[in-house]
Image 1 (tube, rainbow, N blue to C red):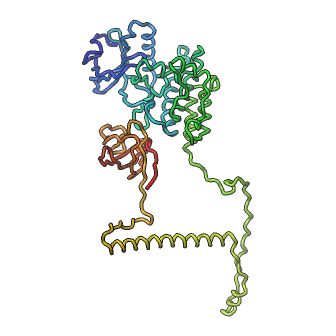
Image 2: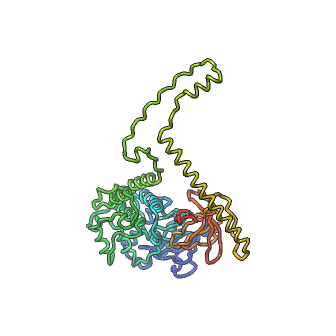
Length: 463
């Protein structure tokens, strides 16, 4: 507990015992958020200070204090780590780890793999909070409200669920109404399945690229959930046919809470199972199974008789035996395969001979005339090498790094804009569970090379 009374946060610099306060980043439902420096440990932190306009209001202030107390009691990599708490000049505050990133709301449509990667982290964070339920907190500890605006992408493949300061305070109620479970609009208390409803809608949004409900204001949007009939993913993203994902979404967003996953932990387990199923290699079917027929057991191959020693024969006798021995005809299948193989080899040889002859003839004409441009030499391989192209698929651009390392900020060369086509040079290489490619491209007319995370690249093709 700190008892000194420094000046208002509008003055610079401010010190709360050991913290020097910097610029204000924004406001949340209850707090003003500032950058700060812990001068004792020399590290950057965030200061969440009760909003000035809420001072003297009993319910908001009590809610902030309760949330601060609960935040200090839970720990998960998908949530902000709490370092300190206290009160200055009658205003409670909390100090957390530094967190910077863009919200998932600002990204383009995600692949199913990326959507599941992010949501598994968020569901795990909510499950940790729900696991600490008690008589006073039947649905567990407080967790930040579920919204794509509240999920920040803080690293390659890593997200955090926060009470975002990036959304204007006036827009927060409408933003959160897109995930409000129908039982809350009916006046019923929240349960652990209430958060599952919001998580299901968040997964739908990340894959479909759109929120399934909307209204003119927060109230109208919240009431839309009373009659929501969640569309199939294939109806909003043509060509996307994933029945297993659609079944999971239907259960998570069921109108009746008892028909959903019972809590975030059960939902998280279902996500893990879905992740494994979608990542499993497809087993190759037998030919008869691919045609939809029942496989027929092969006839047993008769065991050849044991060798019998024969007396030596003369050369003439051997010729007579060979001449009189019955020939063993090949089967029709073997004959067809042989003819087809020979035919294909002759065709390939003919095509290569024509191509080589044309190439040599054109080069000879070019050398004789002298006025035509020279032609390049034949490639080293039989058909030449192929360049594999990818497209950057992240709205604010992707960091190009000197080495495949997502944690070192000084490792960044430049930002490759969204939609840029890059050429693969090497990789993929797995570092810190992230697949990396070494690529070359141009940024603002300058040729650059470096490493990009494959999590934000879409295969374009090869040339």
